[in-house]
Image (cartoon, rainbow, N blue to C red; front, top):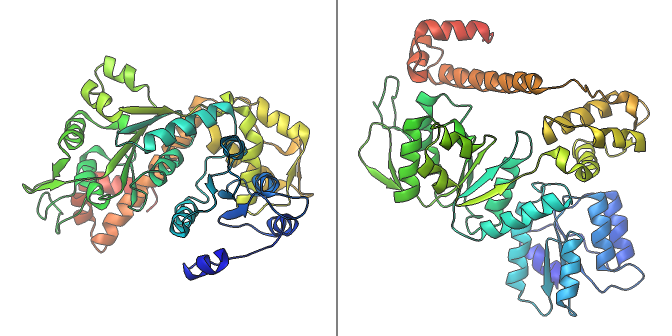
Length: 408
């Protein structure tokens, strides 16, 4: 019955009749979602399948079904990593809705099972069910955007778009039009009306990453949007209304920023109605094994293994670059090995890596973003550098200098 219903709903279904067959299928391939009864014929039941799935494909959402549902069984299933638990008899439309919902989030899970991370996810999930503005705090590389996407997918806005904006990567004089749009003729080079990110996020979520980098004038305009749910395009007078949910993130200590006058206190309270903090990787080293396995499989290194000594070395490191840095080092090691075994000698972990190195990485990212914006302006003007400079709101001489520095 379920195979027919899921197929008619547009899914490609692989159906098996026992736990043994299910485990065999999991060992030979990855699936977007796994749906299993708890009580199955043979020695392998639904809980066993759940555990095996978490071991082989940690990120695959698992929904368990049973006619013998109890609170204790549901709690046990959720502790083992089940995404949801449904008791028979159930409404077919309800189950199909669950499948659609969780298949959209496949591959966006935050990997790990440390108490710190599970506590954060639980808190974020509760915040997702409200209409409060959520502020995600944490160091660079901890997965703030990933958590924001999970909140979006767990909210009533999940059917709408998720629109990310990196407030630190867009020049301040361009950010206002990026957020709110601009009317034709609003500034030199504005030859057409442009929609802003808030307009594109209508019915969904707008994610303001590094919101602490907003300059003072934009902080006031964002506050108005959050309070009045309305805005105007740059150079325009028409008032637009937004129903987009706002999730913000920052790696700065925004409380300190407000105390020192660099961030508006009223805006801080408004964006931080429901704060959620992601712990740095050094405080949840028990997640490193799961993350390492995930990165290897996600990048096509399924047969590469990590020795116990190498794993201990990974767990002992302080990870100033957090999960982003772990991924780079693990995948670099996987590319270097000849025997598909990562040992301590192949791990290029520089114990001297410090904040200066991270700043260099951040500068490279900013330089890349700058290059993308300049190339787009040149494409939009068919290579006319003077018009491109006007669109970018920089002098022609500055544009020529940046073109040379960026080797464009």
